[in-house]
Image (cartoon, rainbow, N blue to C red; front, side):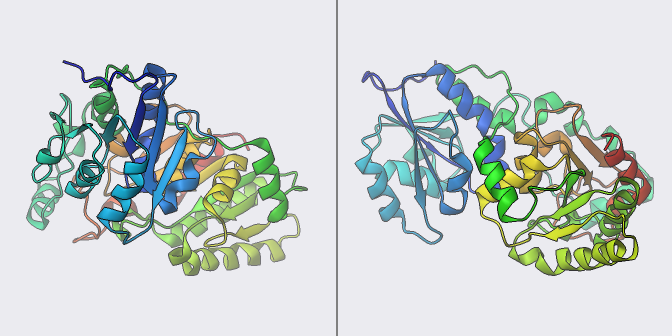
Length: 381
C-alpha cells in the first residue's frame, strides 16, 4: 500500500539528500517525480552545505536546508523541527539520516529498510526487484578471474543496465508515495546569465573555437582514474586536431595533476601558434561556477566522478573511461543515452569496485589514448 502525506493540503515534505555529488545528481529524477505527484507541496531538501548550490533554481525543490560537516544530530533536528513537516523521505541508507528525521518529530518517515535504522522510520521500503549489489571483489577473486580469462560480460549482475542503475533506487522510494517510477534523465539547471558571468570571470567570453573540459581526478580512489599521462596525451592530440580550448576541472586535491596537464598543453600552445589555449580551474570555482562552465563545454573528458554526472545532467556530452566501476550501475544520464561515450576494456575482473588495483590496473591500461581521442572527435568539433 502506498504511503501518503498527512491530510494537510498542501503537504510539507522533507527529502533527506544523499551526501555525495554524483549520488545527488542521480537522485534528481526521483525529486522531479515527487514534484509531479505533489505539484502544490512545499518540498524542502536537507543537504550537506557543500551541495547546497546544486539545487539552486531546481523546479523540484522549494527550500534548501543545509548542514555543516561535523554538525551534531540535535542541531540538524532542531532545524527540521522548525519546518513542521508532515513527511520525510530519507534517501541515504545510514542510521544517522533516519535518526535526524525521527528526532525532529516528523510524523511520517520513509526510507529503505536497513539494519540499525528501521526503528526510526514509520515505513520501511523493501529492496526493489532488479537491485544489483556493488560487490567488492577480493584479491583472490580478481586473480582467479584473470587466470581463467573470464569475459566480464558473463557477470549476470550487470547484464541489464535499464534495471540496475542507481537512479531506480531513488525512484523506488518515491513510488512508495504513489509517484511514477518510470525513469527521467537526471537534470540540473543554470541560467544563461550565470553562464555568461562565469565565462566573463574566467576570460572565456571572446573565445570562438570549441571549448572542451578535462577532469582527470576522481575522489574515490586511484582505481577510478585513467592514467593522467594518457589524459594529457589524449588532450594534446585533440588540441592539435581541433584547435580547442581546454578547461581543466577538479577539486583542491587535483591541483597538482591538473597543473601538470596545463603545463604540457600550454607548452604545446607556445610551440604551435595556432594551438588552442588551456585554463586550469581546479580548486578555483564555486559549485555554481563549475556547473556554468561545464554547461559551456562541447564535451567533457572525465573519469567516473561527480562532475561527470553534473555535466551530463546539464546536457553536456561526456567521454568516460570506466575501470573499477560499472556504467550499468552509476553511468551518466539515463542508461543507454547515445550522447555519451562510456569506454571499457575487456579486463575480466572489471568492475571490482575497489579503491586501488591489487594487480596490474589492466582495466584502465586496456583503454588506449587513440580510442579516447576518437571518441571525443566523434562529436565533430
